Image 1 (tube, one colour):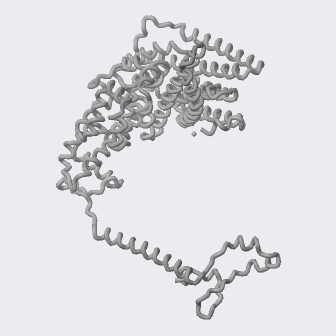
Image 2 (cartoon, rainbow, N blue to C red):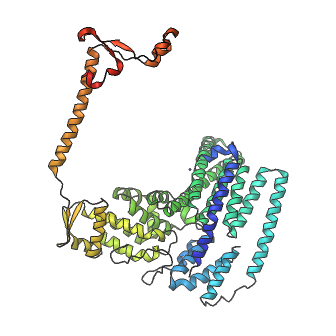
Image 3 (tube, helix red, strand yellow):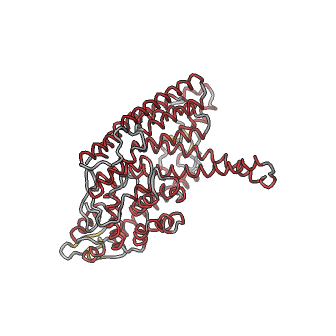
Length: 547
């Protein structure tokens, strides 16, 4: 079962070409848009060393995971991709996931993926649904070509008329058609070409959002992050103008008698709310891109900035609230300090709304903060199969679990001078051998300064020679004091000798032309109060000689 794997390989073949198109189109746009361009092996105690790579299989018999969780929370291509990922990695739900994805793929023009799903259904000997339409492929192919020709003809007509806004909308319509058919390469090309015809900041934001969406499906994360930065800068510049307009409108709202003026005020408020939704969507895109590139702390911060109301009502084509809080939980536990977890997550009114939908995630966070590590790891172990069925989280699940366990071990041992490894293993839901291996790794990496008594299974804090550290500190202070004293003595000697240091460049600028022949001769000064009133060169006045 390699359906999603085949699809990902097809996407990877398009990423480099799409990136080249983006870069070449930006370069071709010249300096007219420069202002817009400057925006850029052990998971837990009782688990195996499953790496969640390649064609792994997940057993969900002990969980409450259901396909309805995906079908009711997602729409569009994201729902299809997640169903296919479940079909690849969960034998218990494979048949249902394939049939459900086969149903939803017929709502698009994604002909190539439709054929792959149909072939896989036949390969698995799954009975086709009663309402199976054998002519769908041919009919959809014909409609796709017909609409493509129409959009291409319209775009040529727009170019003939040289109307910028019409040309921009023509590129956007053509890109939307390619996106619906799963041709992300041509979709990115069309969206980027519309850049030259964007005349307002709002047009630039629309272009960036389109490129981000197509690049997201291609998993071209560098392109996603680049255009997220550009879109955020465009929104910020637009917000300043919109807020100033809203303030002026509100100041005269009580004097309004014209219904058109009231309508204008409500339109301004609608625009501000729309920009807030766009900002939250950009944070979701950036968060997933940071997660995919293994930058977990920035990913958690992006996810924490997503409004619950926006995520629950308007992001069904991208992410569900339950999935987002799962990302927040694992990324924050692996990278945040306990104080940050309490301040940014547990006490956040926005995050509390997410946690109400996922009580198990809330329990993990609270148990971790309250140092009830045994309960925390037990719940994480139960939810591990569900996390492994997430296409964006599963490649990083092993790393995140490792980091969380290491932080727990470090925090657990911090207040003690010695600790029983037997008791630690019991508290961390693991075996002594596994715990010892983890402690060796932490000691070698310098995260814990301790020694292991393998015979008695006791962990000791590494002894430190306090006398040696005191001597080293005293020597450092002595060297600093000696350096300061030498500098003070040098300054005192210079003042006492009445020496004056002049800027050579200033002297040469006011020097007469007849003195140019002496530029290479070192300047000499008379040093008073010195035996014999000798003449000395400036180069000979070093710190030691002045001392």
